[in-house]
Every structure is written in C-alpha cells, then in structure tokens.
Image (cartoon, rainbow, N blue to C red; front, side, top):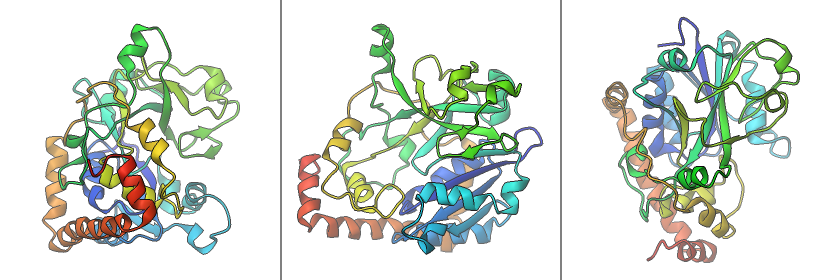
Length: 335
C-alpha cells in the first residue's frame, strides 16, 4: 500500500534493536510504507542478522547496509553519514516520499485512520508533514519483556493536559514525511530547505494545519504539542523499562558512544509522569498478520527469540560493572 500510487521509503539507523524490529516493521509496512533502507553498526543482539533475513524474505521492500561511518570512525555523525549515503541508492532516488525515523518511534494514526492515504484524506493534501513526537515513560516497568512495545507503555512523559489548561506551550520534537522532490539537506527530524515558503508547496502538522513560514524556512525541529496531533502523532518509546534503558545507555543512541554512568538525569527527565495515552496501543489486525508472517519463518523466529537472550546476557554484564550497578540503583531497577 503506497500513498496513492506513489512510493514511500522509510530510512533509519539502528544499533541493538533486535527484539523490536518485527513489531516496528509490521506496523509501518501496514500503514503505507513501501520500502525500508536501513543502516546498522556494531550490533551484538542479532539486529543485523534479523534485517539480513528480512531482506532475503522481502528483497523488494527491505535493504540492509552497514552504516558508512564504520569505515570512517573519526568522520561525521552516524545519522548524517547514513542519510548522505542513502542518496546514492536507486531505491532512494525512485521513492516519491521519504520518511526518516527511529526504531523506538511508531507513527500513530488516530481517529480511526488506518493508513497514510486516509490520513491525507482527513488532513488535506500536503508535500510535507511534521508529526509531533510524544514521549512515553517507563510505566513503572523494571524488567524487559517479550510483550509488544506498543502495549506495555501508555503513559506520556509530558502533561499535555496541564499545559493546555494553563495555556502554556508544551514543546516537543518532530519527525517528517516529505516528498523526495523537496530540496535541501535531509536531517533526522526534517529536511532543511531555505525558501520553502516561497515554493508554493504545503507543509502541515498532524492536525492538518499549515506550519508557519518562519518555521519551515528554518532548521527548527520543535513544535507545540497541543493542537498538532488531531489525526496523527509519533509515539516515542524513548526509555522503555529500566532494564532496557540500561541497555540503551550502554549501547549509545544508535551510535558507539560510551555514556554508561552518566544518564541518571536523562532517565529522570524521560520518566516524568504526564497523561495516559492509549492511542496507537497494540498492532492493527493487518500489522498483527504481518508480524505473525515474519514469525512463521523458522530462521527469523529463531533470530528474534535469540535477541532477547542475548540482551539479557548483556544486561547481566552491565550490572557487574561499577557504573552499570550505580545507574541501575539510581533509576530504581533493584527496587
């Protein structure tokens, strides 16, 4: 399913996201994403092997590549290097739409909308859509789980209701779906296109409202969280459980960065209590069917199930370190 008859390519970078890939991909492929171009680096939990198997099963929809920065470790940024490299692929040049997102982000179409065609029917035609990111906290979960991410976490980090009642802004980030014909640099949150407002193209938010000219002509990635999510938002499961956060910190944010022992403040900010939000909870019937199709392949199922065990072993190694144990105690993992 495409946007009309136009092809949509999703681009992302990953490192150690093994348990989440099948849910994440089934969800997005059944929303109307046609194609995935993905870059990984230094994976130890079967992420790369899962993606390689998916490419064998669906070569017309999945392309997995090493992040080019692995060859140039002292040059550039992981996301930016991958996005620049992506432009050299035929499937990138053939795509009508581009959507840059991460493995912990799920595009959440609301009000009964089930795919991107229906989103544009409701929100109106556009050449770019910036979706408001809504971060979710840990929901009090300490341990990792084999349950779906979209079922486990239903509590937001930001109290949007209180902000609206107090008539105060609740700024958050965006991720953007945009036509490939839009000029400018591709960045993780949005294309940066000077003079976009003068092109006659339309850039809207998840409520179908036009984004202001001074925003679209800048590199701004912040958006008001209230009033911009009527038809769609981006559910961002940034920390998940305490155990999964420890693994995230040890891994680095899709990069090879050493942050272990320095992330208590990040957790405290991301684990604030906001509102209950069950929109986007679980998989649609179509996505569940695709998820089960993935698991019907014995090799893919084995790789998927192994990823949980590999991560549990890594967690135990982290907890044996002084920095890992200290951070685990600070975020309440042992409580």
